[in-house]
Length: 327
Image (cartoon, rainbow, N blue to C red; front, side, top):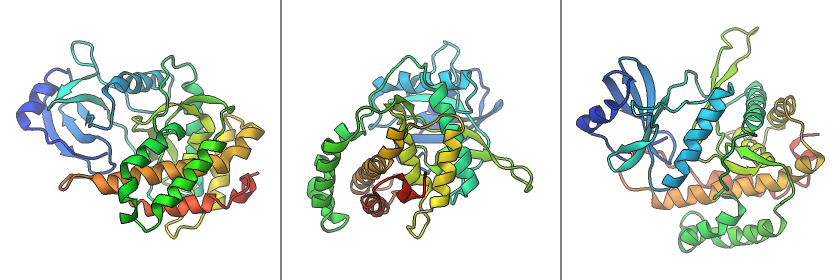
């Protein structure tokens, strides 16, 4: 989450007045993330999240995102629910941006998740995959293998500003992944951005009660793609330590949690190192783009692309799932 567009008090009051959620008490910008402008909105009726969709989000995709959250919430998955205005619409305009209000989820996210958090994440991800299986709308993943080279082309000439030699390294990795990317694995609804700050937990105040996932948020990269690719994204996001080392215990817990609800085929398991390389490249590219193009003064935390260059190099040396400590 982030803030790029400032909203005046008058504009906010007029916007919220179209909903039956009471008058505005407070509205505070949220600085985490990089994609849209997000505010924690407090009204007389409770807390909500107000999102203004910025330029990277295609307005044509918004019915997919909002419809998906409605679909998953109706099937019992803990995720934000879009709030309809008095006219029944969940999507409208604010400050010349598409905008929506969604429900607020209680919980905390963990910057340094433990193995038990990884297990709970795996189970919640499998639940999402299963409950999203009958969602009727499909959305191709614009940030999968077919989209990486066009994205790289936008930063190729400046890539070495991030680190010398980055451009030829990415070029070689693109050529490899474009040749070897799997096309015959199970496909379905994936989140595609299940980083720790998008997974909320509650409970665990004593050692006898483990923490549970209280909600999955930020579905604005969700799409139709390889289900195992979602797992590969999480191996990158959850299983590396701050010093850059890979934690095989966390990887085992993540996979065991996932497989409690949805077994993985032998082909999916075998493809994990390749999918993890692709996931690392995807976030290396998007972080590089943001590092080079984030507007001065934007209330947003830029994320270091070098973290994902390190992860990419790690995955390049993994021959099979056993290299992650996974059987």
